[in-house]
Length: 358
Image (cartoon, rainbow, N blue to C red; front, side, top):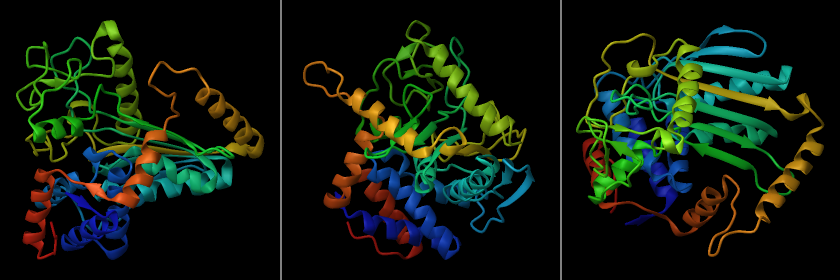
């Protein structure tokens, strides 16, 4: 069923208001969440809304957080999110990074005591508004096994980097450090479809196409899938994100990162830090070279890669191209929601007395 994005964004805002979020925070959270649907990352958009409500129901989400800096230098800071929505905590932390970069050339912020922050790309792209390079990463619940392990120790741990150009649209890389984000598995589960081999393993460490494997004791695999295809590199990327987001900030890390409302479990279990952790950064281009010269060369870089000969029926793309095209399309034509997601929204509407016309 197709909905206008403005309608869905307003519905999201009403739900966040219903659990006690202030007007400005509910508006910001709705903007971050719908940006995922607009950019084609359906696994991290409105389909996750009921998950945030479950965090609230389980006492793990503070709708009115006091977000504060607990340690800082001219170019760095640690932010305590006070158990707030990561959808709100991360953009506010990124603003601190931008303010520091404006003053001293770069700003780097580690965040503790937060929750799931939506798509990493949204936060990294905030730097583009200031003509800066943006970074965003977060750790997540342990659904991923290190190479050769049967135990889940890492999250999908995404990385996003946004780089401005002059005439061309910006370069925006936003990707999980796993073969696939867990949200994609949830989509397969809703459609009762199998997973490609290389995405997950079963509880005994064997490759499987069972899209419910993680729920049944299995694990997601690092980017690469197996050692022969470079899973140790995906494992390394996930570990870097976990260390920067969790160990550096004082948040939980590794197997202690509290779960989002996914994979059938909610209990936070043992803690070694505070909540979920993020790491955000902003770099002023003229801290390295004249900004216009850099952006001119970025145009040259982008144009050269676009002009590379492609295999038959394909086109060489720049990171950010597919998402940008989908955003244009979905803003005009609307966003198609799967029936299970529509039913989920109808349940939220009934609970909070909000209108949701399907």
